[in-house]
Image (cartoon, rainbow, N blue to C red):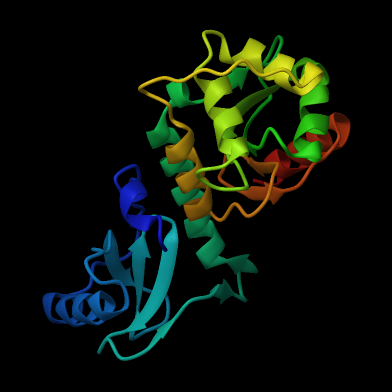
Length: 243
């Protein structure tokens, strides 16, 4: 939760349930202030289970009893529908958070011809599997996949990984700088006032990114790890047809 406050301003809340009544809302807010002092919930709405409420902080979702005494953090499943209700919320929140960040903060490699899929990849210049993913960029683009990069220097901030990412994102032509960095291990130092790397790193942590590459699909599904282009395309096709 250490990066929660700076990033919440980016997020749009997802609310499809009934709002908690005033008395319940007050009890839950008071209880949650003990857990997360000074952090205000985005929404407090009734959960599918009677007497339980969903308390949302961006994509972070907690379930709290009406009296504010009991809290649990975990996934809620609808066994009849065979669906993970908590992950469905997280997926929507990921999409909204990434959209709120905006395309200007991304390094984008557009699909060639018809766009079949768009993925958002949290990447690290020091990650071997991120390099392998980038080596398949032309093939992914030829397969109709648009790739949007966000920075996630796993070593944190400050670190040499962060400095490398900042140099790429601040370069006059970030995509060209990214290609050179992954192909030839050459990075020309650059700085800029609107460097988005710290914000992207914080956002990645909030969205559940723990390693790189981490791939966020158009519906917010999070896929950890590397996949070769053809396997990725097949998975994306299968995922789209299942929606």
